[in-house]
Length: 145
Image 1: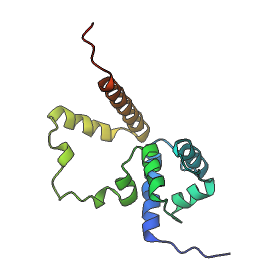
Image 2 (image 1 turned 90 degrees about the vertical axis):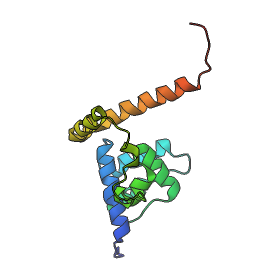
Image 3 (image 1 turned 135 degrees about the vertical axis):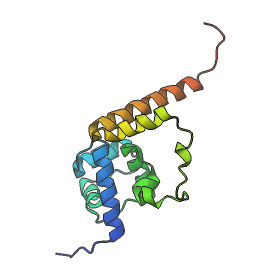
Image 4 (image 1 turned 30 degrees about the vertical axis):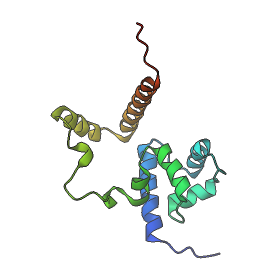
């Protein structure tokens, strides 16, 4: 039997993948990941064995598969591949949070105290609201009520 040498980058990716799966409400199951992935991926699907290799840190998916994984798990491709701490933003410069009011800050603190299942539900609701809003913005304006 061939001995598998572990790659620290693959293992770090696997840890981020398992965490993202948990936060998205997926079991740490290679079969479940492969099935969910294949429903969203337009190329040749993956096997449960390939998904198991990603989950266990044996291999890292190619960029096109990272993109599909990130959409499935509702995490940015950058954060899934590199982790949030590897951001190119300067330290102490929270760009996307600089315009939050106190109510938004309080809401985020409460969100972070929710269990992973409730956080996943909130993420889905926000995503659905966003999609609805985008759909409404695409409709032509009619001056009639």
